[in-house]
Image (cartoon, rainbow, N blue to C red):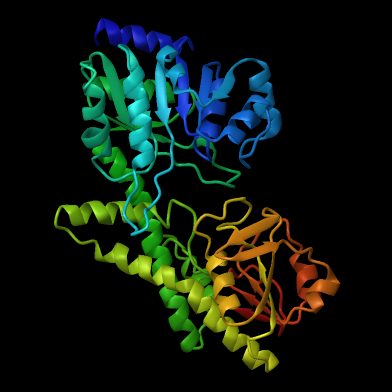
Length: 437
């Protein structure tokens, strides 16, 4: 260990290292808060002025970050936020947590990573640790970020340190938070890995060091690809089970009693959010660049992408069979609009596509979601409707898309005429009003 590395390690352990987090979304803000709570001085950087104002006022806009906790560390002077990247000149650690979406042709868009890298390059100084947490394809850290930073004349592993450590945040998960989720770390050099590992051990007890940044990047994509493939399998089996007159939910419950060789996954109306819906495409895109085809990912993606339309087609059938009505001019309520329960995030939510498809078929659509008071999507502008008995009785069909825990499903069932349950949330109820996916 060199003198420079020893000095940096001492800064980390003594909490004297100053940390910048670029990107204050559902990954960056919780991470910034945890480091601040552990005694570090943290500055958050974001291009969204509204987020900056909220942080500096101690008001949280992320469900996993309680406002009381954020306000406390802001009052203590441990966390502040700004849009000015010049503050990077005064920090020791920069952690990049920016979005990595898909572009219009469904190819990876790492423009936010490139923009953050340019900002870091402009202020890069000796004795600085740079960590990328944004999910991306294998090779981004050493092919995109490293060459840009080395233009400064500084040498990685000696003058500055560069790593990839995949974010593993699960929004809405009450059991697993930043503090108790193991961190994977892959550095460009062993010194990079050692310092990043030491930093993360200050906030979580388990750090897994891998041999390279590419392995760390692959780890994140492997985790999410595992999920998209298995969910795709269950969605395909759910469609087959329906035609075979088999209750897929009962079959899954029976299968998961096996104590080995099986892990339960569940069908649903489609996938949303960033991790499952977008991340595996980064892997398949990179593989194609190297002459490989990942058939499982592509097939699972297609199966999952078809589920919203399958739900709409089933809804048409359910409404006609059980009520004798056509979907056109029928009143249809979509219950739950976010991509998963108990979060405010509507990114890539299948509910939005379901609403669009229903509208195109002439249905009178409405929705209820306790997390989303208003939506605008592809010409649709709706306000979340209260789940009163009078309102529910007017609906010809309720489609349960997102199973938020705060909804009183017993009351919904009592007042509704017909419910199409795509999440098996009403499994404990026995009623002829319920049709399951």
